[in-house]
Amino acid sequence: MKKEYKIAVSEYFYSLQGEGITTGTPAIFLRLTGCNLMCGGKGVEHDGIMRNGATWVCDTIGVWQKGTTWSFPDLINELNSCTDFIRRLRSGVHLIITGGEPLLQQNRILTFLEYLETEYLLKPIVEIETNATILPHKELDNRVQFWNTSPKLTNSGVTIEERLDIEALKWFSSNPKTMFKFVITAKEDFHEIQDQLIKTSIIDSSKIVLMPAADSIDQLLERNQMVAQLCIDNQLRMSTRLHVEIWNKLTGV
Ligand code: SF4
Image (cartoon, rainbow, N blue to C red; front, side, top):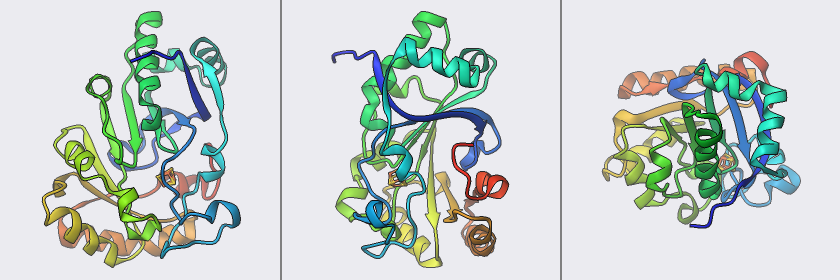
């Protein structure tokens, strides 16, 4: 594997983890450029109109479609000045590598984490947020503490061939560091998870977290009770969306 000491980044900020089992944890977000899916349906990125049966749209398309390729020393200088990067990670703040789909750059992520160890004697607590369509390398898995996966359903408007990779899903399911976070807009979404992923033993239901699809406080309040009831009835964990609760439609916070 040829090592590249550079990585394409769309944005970075210091905040709190807003979703999943580490919700509320102080974290530095590093959003990498590019995604292999288009939730909302292909074309939504041009006109905002949902297609292919989508009931929600990716709320960061405009962010991950743009980015800058940084050398590691330049990126760390930048992150230090904006987020106090090295000092915070040393004191236990999580590093959340998100996207887009960050595993499109998994070799670069691994080299970056190795670089932090070599140059700064730093092994941060790492969360990677992925759509679970790409199998991670073992070397990367060794440096990750949380795999926050979010497999996509029919409601994403993405074809089943693009959004479900059975081999990757089974690998994630057998990994003790994995959580499967599903975005729910209606009860039928959970029936789909049951039929396609639980009953077929592709994923372990104890790792599932249901989260309402919502990009505004109004939508979150509207869907919270429906998702809560699904979780109660099926003994599953629920996640809210802390960022929406606190900052409503604002991104990058
Ligand atoms: S996989 Fe994630 S980043 Fe990519 S389009 Fe879907 S929601 Fe957005």
